[in-house]
Image (tube, rainbow, N blue to C red; front, side, top):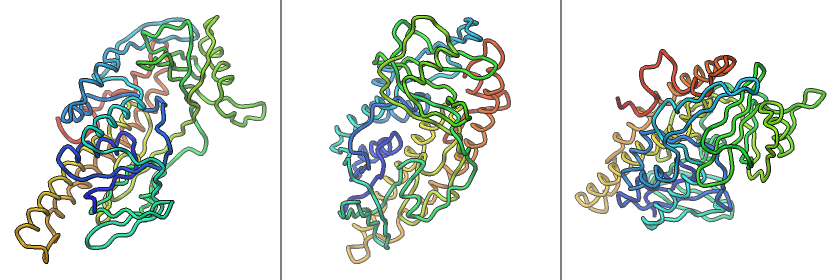
Length: 383
């Protein structure tokens, strides 16, 4: 029996796996995907996340490969207004590369991600959790962590509601594209009174991450994202002659969802990251909040398992297990649920603020990094 089964190999699951494996906990990581993605997705790593990565020797590599001093270049109605530095410390790096670095570190601990392994059912008893995979295999673990995203199967199988609100339509198209002839030294942010387009240079690649409002047809129906659509959006908002977009390697959409669970623990199963809470992108807190969840859960699980092992040695096999560490594990949701609730509120306020602020020439997405009324960033409570 493995100590902890982690479902989902995004930044949250991989951080949790590294935390546990570093402390000698036996871990298995399964993911429904059949191959690792190469999509930029979340791109901001806060200083707190880098502190967490430092504990397993990864912060230096992230800093070396990412962009630590990002410049925001703001345009309005096609005119360059100003440049400004990123408002908060941290590193910009494409999510696919952050995950790759985490997998490399995890492999150094002797753990590899088991791809094509979709968890379809769960069962718990007094001694552990049984996870059934889509191919019929059964994995037995003392504890399970659902880090499988906003559409979490683990959350569904645990019977937890995902309460909150969500838009019925997409508010943004996004993707990774090349844009030959455009400077890669800055994050380009074009705005007009009726929308805008962003192109962020992805470190270590020739691509940019694109974000823009969706296109609609003559009947008002939303068009799916496409390279041709991205070019039309670029011409509309940026209007830079001679720049052609090409090689779209990721095409996606995003809509506002503000949801969370009311529990992050059910018996021997836990939720972390987007499986437990989703919120607006303003401020770049999504990936980082999941990383912080993983850090707290990993430390508590390692300590609880250590207490249980000590108790088993002391009491003998006939009394193995017991309640050792259970009160300690209750502390996970006691710590992280308030952080999740605050993050939902703060990011919703930030999104509303930035959507209004960018209608003023010279203001960009930095307006969503922090509100004047905020005294500290969402996180694990550290000051």
